[in-house]
Amino acid sequence: MAIYTKTGDKGETSLANGQRISKADARIEAYGTVDELNSWLGLLRAGLKQSSTNNRSVDEQLAWMQNKLFNLGATLSLAPGNWVNAADVQLIETWIDAMQAVVPKQRSFILPAGSECVARCHVCRTVCRRAERRMIALGCPEDALRIMNRISDYLFVLARYIGYQNNETEEAWHNE
Image 1 (cartoon, one colour):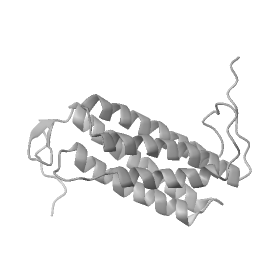
Image 2 (image 1 turned 90 degrees about the vertical axis):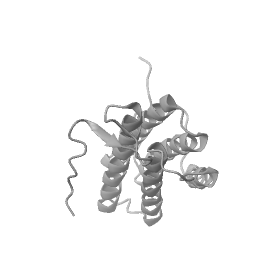
Image 3 (image 1 turned 120 degrees about the vertical axis):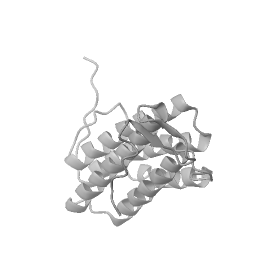
Image 4 (image 1 turned 180 degrees about the horizontal axis):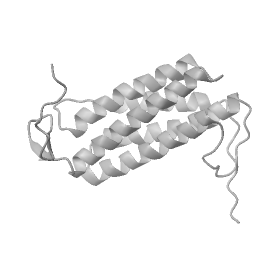
């Protein structure tokens, strides 16, 4: 099977429901940004596998999120079905709570800095926030917005968790 279909050569693509729309449409921008986040998560996973923070449960959680992001793409491309739900959000919250129980209490805003893996978490978080903004502009279903919000929260806490595991010092924001 050829990878090229030539159906997008004039700047249009098809949604899951068969509708043809411009590749510049806000809907395509939203699920393209979700796809970008998925790729960044893959890079984060690769970095974690090569680091001293090679944590199997974190890798499994990130793989689960990557699959959910594909589901979210289905939602955004108007595929019929319930692709994300409240149980997904609750699962992410349990992972956040488990990491929060380990890291010290946050006392100030922190800079998105640290080791390469910590920095990758922050890049993923900011791309996730951008995807969330694109989805809000579309008026996406509540569960879709909630899962993106929790994934960004997870990525922030994961950055702190990885830094803590590696004895890194967080850089506090200084209003100078």
